[in-house]
Amino acid sequence: MQLKKLRLLHESLRRYLRRGAWEHLDKLLQRTRDEEVAAVMALMPVEDQEAIFKRLPTAERQADVIVLMDAPFGQNVLSPLPAEEVAAILREMAQDDMADILADLNVELRSAVLEILEQSDSIEDLMRYGADTAGGIMIPEFVSLTEDDTVHEALVKLRESGDVEMVYYIYVLNSSGQLTGVLSLRKLVTAKPERRIGDIMESDVISVTPDTDQEVVARMVASYGFLSVPVVDDSHKMLGLVTVDDVIEVLREEATEDILKMAGAGDELVETSSVRRNVRIRFPWLLASCVGGLVGATVMSGYHETLEKHAVLAFYLPMILGMSGNVGTQTATVTVRALALGHIGALGNRLRVVRREVAIGLVMGLIYGLIVGVVASLLTGTATYGLAVGLAFVCGMIVASSIGAAIPMLLSRLSFDPAVATGPFVTTTVDILGIITYFGIARVLLSLLHGG
Image 1 (cartoon, rainbow, N blue to C red):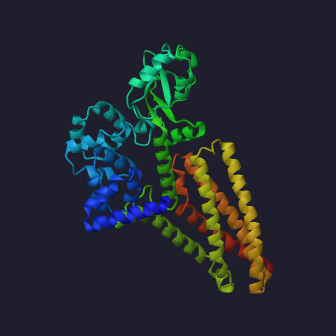
Image 2: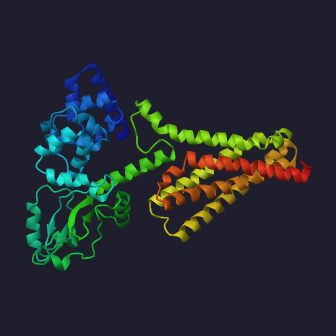
Image 3: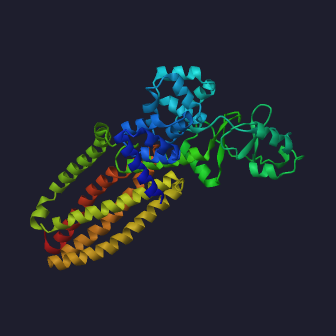
């Protein structure tokens, strides 16, 4: 039902834009949720996105849509506006979102907007941190108490705190601003009014530093089921918190990045209309595949005598390379995901993963090697060809599984992104080794059994 609704919304907005039916467009936008507007705008050309953005009736709704859309949408729609209008829109955002958008604007407009905004100092502080760190995605606003506050006093402070984002936990600080405890909102409202906060708080607080990688924060939230994680400096002074909505966005971004890297298509989604940029991003990865193919052809040329005498072997090479490549990609994908989720850590654990994947490759190789070997024997009328093809399947899948598991873990060990190991990297390596294995086995078997 939701998909059908979004499809209808998309068609209606595009139709009103083409006809210039602004009154109908405005009415439709007024009764449509910002999340739905952003979802359909993401499927439209840039010019249509900008036209709909201009028709949004309030700065608050414009801010919501900017936050919901992927970059560089915010830069595209805000850059043409005067600094006063940009500041009015940014005021409707949380400070972490505000800092992200400002970082994308040109220097002149950013400086002009910061001069207008009241929170410019705290926003500039956020902009100092890396975009992929806890500091880069944290919000500096939070509700804090002292250990000597009573529950009654805490509830009064909570009511007076105003519109603070994600008040699910209350953080307890000492006189120096250092984090000493945490208290859930549920525990606070169910406690007796006269009780001290220090008596009911949880003193074992899990926190992160501003330079903690956002993926680490995301895994922490997923592991513990937190709704927010406090961010502290080296002296344990609380700076802000990372909320679960930002963590969800991080997980989505990281998953998208890994998928694109695995396919050799860069590390971020780009506009489908941007042919030049897509070519520039994908060309190096395809170049690696092209070079790998040339290397494979060179390797095959070393077996031309074997092919001349036994041309039937060439018929089964695409099947062996295709199956081995699929196994290698499957193994690499599973390994990369396990590394991203923190399921693979210590050296012993890594070796167990490799052994397991080799065992999987062996079992699958035996099954498919037997099937294809029997078929090859029947089709060629020679058991030797079937044996060569079957053994090549077994060895090829073992090699593919080993490569698919080992390369991502090696890259991770060397502090490179293991996601680049899949796709062109693994398949090219597996293809070259597969050619060597196949013809090596065939040459040896045919030499032993038929003298050549």
